[in-house]
Amino acid sequence: EPEVTQTPSHQVTQMGQEVILRCVPISNHLYFYWYRQILGQKVEFLVSFYNNEISEKSEIFDDQFSVERPDGSNFTLKIRSTKLEDSAMYFCASSWLATAYEQYFGPGTRLTVT
Amino acid sequence: SQKIEQNSEALNIQEGKTATLTCNYTNYSPAYLQWYRQDPGRGPVFLLLIRENEKEKRKERLKVTFDTTLKQSLFHITASQPADSATYLCALEGNTGKLIFGQGTTLQVKP
Image (cartoon, rainbow over all chains, first blue to last red):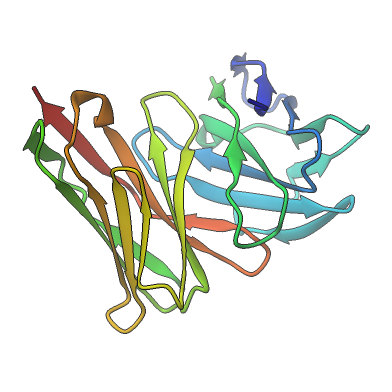
């Protein structure tokens, strides 16, 4: 069964450093998403991406965040200058359709900012 | 803004019984509502999707209802098994496909 993959599984970084989280969505999917989950809290939407453009972003997704699909397979989330409060599990998801369709989530990257 | 409430207390039931989880929402009229399962340290896994014009949806031992008047969805697992122990997430679907999740309800099925 096809699956979404994410690397690394765990990233430790110092405050102020840049991090890039990588995702390989399911190959024929067209819609891509990033979510995050702070420990013990709910899964929160960050950004949706379609046709090489951001479709929607949340208030969390400020100027420190960016997304890119540099080639036909990878989908990345960059945090330019990490803060302690960015520590969370980051999930990538992909879907064939924008609505009325399941989203396939990756296993997540645990980001720890020290 | 949209608000989704799921029972934050863990639900403990005996194997073989039916588990019923509740999802209530306000300030939104979603066209679709989805349920996901999340195991500790893992990503959510899709279970069921129900449309606003559907009252009920079934898949094997799972059943979801959607009452747009009450703004409530119920999720049932019949003949529950210890392997069903997990956190179950309700999610409203936005126009661009973004999912707005509830905080989840943890189900513990005891043998």
